[in-house]
Length: 231
Figure 1: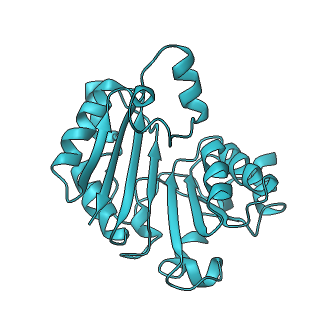
Figure 2: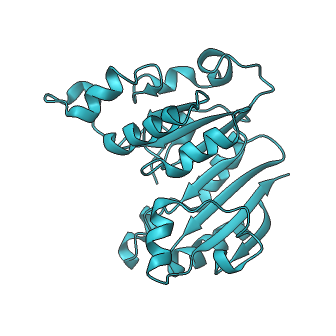
């Protein structure tokens, strides 16, 4: 687990030969995308300074947008809510904001940042719902310490959320899910429900199938799901 200030990613300013995705973020999508240097400057002020919304507006976060299918869907389905997506890699950042904008969503922004330290970006009680879909399971025992869902992480994450907000978690990895459930059940979150087979559960009707999810379903792999709340 990273401390409150450590970043693992290489600053864009230190990349001597920017690729096409970096150029796109800095030029075509510069008003929709924020670098690791820019993003922390808006801590506590995302609604007012970035989205031009009152403090009462909803502000949701997707940690790890992937190719942006869910990100774009969420932004277009809920135009009344502001949405921020965090990613480290440049290609998924571009894919995510491009998909959202092409679908007419102007309520979305993407940030290049490490998922391990969102408290560098957001103040206590600044966020509403948080989505964590298919994070790296770090399957080998010696790697488990790198898993995103840890006790300390949830202790800090819940402080960023407002009352009556949700945390949604999905994974295709049974071992990671078992680990996450134990952490969830010993956290300050309230467990609203969980399932070892999302698509055969009561949660299936409201579920949006992500890119990774469709791949796993095609292979016959069940999707593990948990929904938690801050009350």
